[in-house]
Image (tube, rainbow, N blue to C red; front, side, top):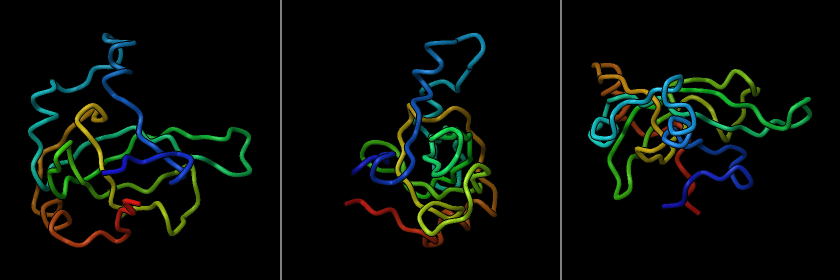
Length: 131
């Protein structure tokens, strides 16, 4: 499965493990076993790097929650559960967007509840384009 690419998609994911290695005392992340054990409805916080047109800075970085919708061979497919604050609403990337991610991207986790399980079972508002 294709991973998000800033040149193709206008955004990509940062490596949480890499950030933790660079600053282990100030950038804690959950244990790897926990990041590998998420189930549909659980939440994962990821770091998104987003291209911004016409801004002083060509990119913004946001930490946003994603609801796990299913497990994949390399990690997870999830549904974005936040609205990026640094970009205006668009048809390609917004709450409800489906996206693939892996355990090394995860910087925080949250337990599923009834609402997140319902979202995980629903079709994504903006399906992932795996081409």
